[in-house]
Image (cartoon, rainbow, N blue to C red; front, side):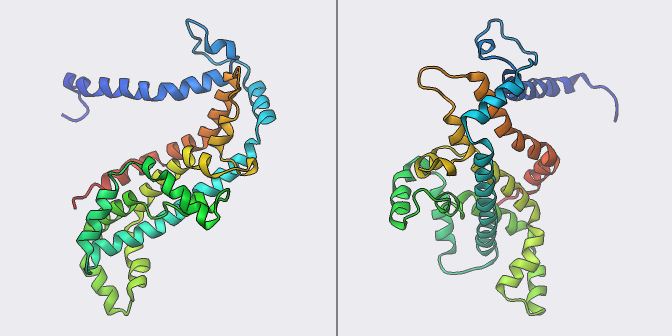
Length: 276
């Protein structure tokens, strides 16, 4: 049976192939338009082959924005935020999964309820808090808030509950491990698949964040890529080829990261699909 062609498999493969093509087409369109002139964006029928204007468009991008400065700002913010999310979410998830303390279930239920609240509702309160702390215009306001996300804690708790066996923890306690050493030496190695997925998920989300940095950052030298790219839109007219080129080079690092870890990315999702 293995290796033979089954007509019924086409019922699954063709829709998946079409879905993959549709999902990838926007990325392909960005690449094509970044190599052409703005006039080609409005051409009908559209040209779907590569042009020769990529270097010209990128030159315009560098002339109109501090691309590398914004790139380094984004890398710094996304990296720091991701590291903090992995640390605090894994700590909280491990505690919720393996420790019984007063209010455990109540706190976890509150955490689940908070996931249902739209993030836009917290923008004004969060801004007022940042203002009181004097963090407006600083990277701290982009890195520290959200470093213990509800989804991250929920994800780590679900994984840790099934993946970390009580025998491992008991063996660590016999060897004299305290609570933090149990987390660091026993739990953390087991949680690496879940941490890999959460790290990729958080890094991409922080990299693409636009609204919160737009509200907080008021210094052009501290702009992230998403804010800097939005400055390319003119008041009366926009060089869309230039915008496409900037968008492509801002997205390219994420595409490379995803392609590099795609197999591990999918396996981590499957490995973390455990029941509460």
